Image (tube, rainbow, N blue to C red; front, side, top):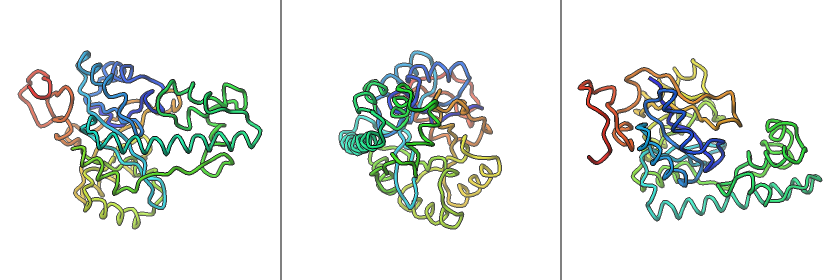
Length: 293
């Protein structure tokens, strides 16, 4: 079956709205979809309404960034996104983003590229600003010929306008998600720059702190890496999940939907869906029903 538990909307740095993502998921035949925007839940209300209207099994989600010698991302599924303490922490994280964006624009101006923060805000349409929005502003003003060039030449790590993010530690992300009644999952481990021994040490530590799952299937992973991460998930008793990290047209090579064996996705995730469908373990053929009925 097709699953996608890692997609981004215009509420952060994706190019499709939450409702457009749901429409695409329905057309593609995706069995379970999660909206996991960066550091914000602002798209979840529209996502919920679209799921209810179209009958797509959707899962509330978020993606949080952390630092552990390198960048680490933690996904949260089934979160109580209206929890006031959770939202207060997200607001602090977004303030860190705002400070970084202002610093990046300052560096660009020092390089002779006249990019104002207001121009970047216009590209984000009032949503959470991220580097892709800065890249779009550079492209619009003719400083680069593509978004890739913007990152390669100015915005990527090691480039002259790069500014490191102020982020949480991985254990902070796990605690935050758990307090919001969510399930924390380690995102796209193949993108983490740690050797096997160091990565397994980190997994063991995070498992003890409440890590629930590992994103074994990802657009970031080769077939041999998927096999290796499935092995690790079994070794550390972490639940395997699947997500494309779909952003829309800014990453056109990544398509929505990950093809996985019917029994690989934990039933707990299906049970948390806004609209629940029968899980792979269920064979009674009942119709979909709303959570709470």
